[in-house]
Structures are given as structure tokens and as C-alpha cells.
Length: 251
Image 1 (cartoon, rainbow, N blue to C red):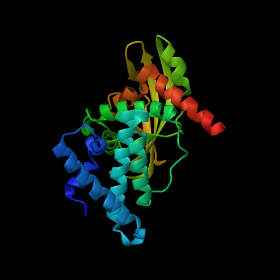
Image 2 (tube, one colour):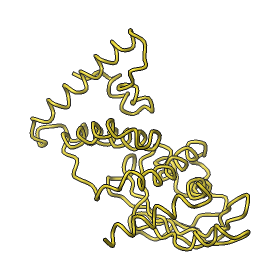
Image 3 (cartoon, rainbow, N blue to C red):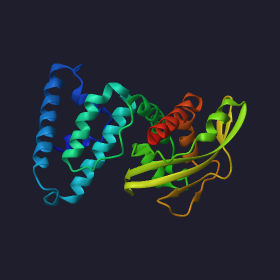
Image 4 (cartoon, rainbow, N blue to C red):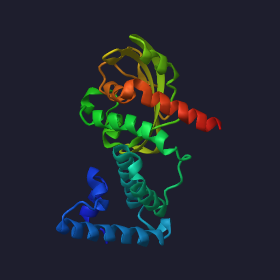
């Protein structure tokens, strides 16, 4: 069935190449064979009761597919929906439970923009420079999503000022690595929103799965990662997303 190369491909940023027609004839043939093997394996697994499949293999397949889905949507936006539909169907075939209500495409695009910057910033940071190395590594892999439980109401006004400040909460849903699917990280951030540069202030912390908060020094590597995402479009992306999600929940 699947080769090791096929499985590794789920963990690469180039997975979209499986569905990219703009490749050479030789590459097209290789891509076609790989796609056929992947689809054949997924159809095969779909007809086998979950209890008969190796648990570790199921978890790994779901994790890599979720990672591929997030990266594809973050990088390609609304045009990615055909590929996203395929990945979601593959996850459903592997027994992935349904998630929260789907966000409208234009709303999800705001969140993806913020997450994309967080993921990119995390890949440039060292896990030795943070109080929570496993969390920074999860962000660098893209194994997270911003949760609707975030509270960024004060950020909108602070971002409009020359030297505003805000106290906000950001909820991240995690999976992969040391985190089980459904794990939560809740940041409490104190932010100074300067005209040219945003910075973290003393008092920032993060709580994992409801445990005691872990204090984050102002030079903790997690903080510039969070700020990289929150400052997208001068803070408008995260605040517009939050407002839209709040309206959707209220309706």
C-alpha cells in the first residue's frame, strides 16, 4: 500500500503538489501513482472497523492530515477549498470526529492569516529560550488553532493609539507531539501596541489544560511568536475574526 515516502509527504508543506497540474510529465506520472496509492489506502481503511486498525497508526494519520489541512488553508486561502474538502473527507474516513461549526470562508481567512504568522515566527525561535518548549514546538509544526474562547476586545482600541496597551486572552487548541487532540493553551498577555512595534509587558502567562499558569518572562520566545500573529494588519485580523465569531455564536 503506502510507501514511507507517501507517509512523509503528508508532513510536508508541498503536499498541495499532489493536486498541482503545473508539473512536468515525469513528475505528473509520479504524482499520479502517489495519489492513487494514498486514495486506495484511504478507501481500504474506510471499510475496516476502527478497532481493527493499529491505534498508533490511526492517530498518526489523523495528526498528519490535520496538519496538512491547516497548512493548506493558511497558505492558499479560499482557493484551497477543493483540496481542503479532500483532506476533510480523508479524516472522516479515518474516523475523525466532526469539529465545531464551520466558519464562513472570509472569517476563517482572518484566523488563518494570524495562525500563519505565528507558525512562521515559531519556526525561527529556539525552544531552549522558553518556559514551555513543547508548546513552541507545537506552534512551529502548525499543530494549533485559535479558539473561539479568546478575548481580544481591548486590543482594538489599544491598536488605534500611538502607545496603547491591552490585556487579552488567547486560546489555542493543540494536538500532536506531547499534546493530545483537544488540549488547550490559554495565554494571558499584556501588550504594548506602539506605532512601529508591539511588545510584551511583564505579567504574561500561559495555562495548559486548566493547570496552574506558567509565567512567561518578557524575553520568552513564545511572546514574539504570539505578537507576530496578533499584529497582522495592525491587530485588525484577530479583532475582526473575534467579532465575527462572536456574532456567529450569538445568532
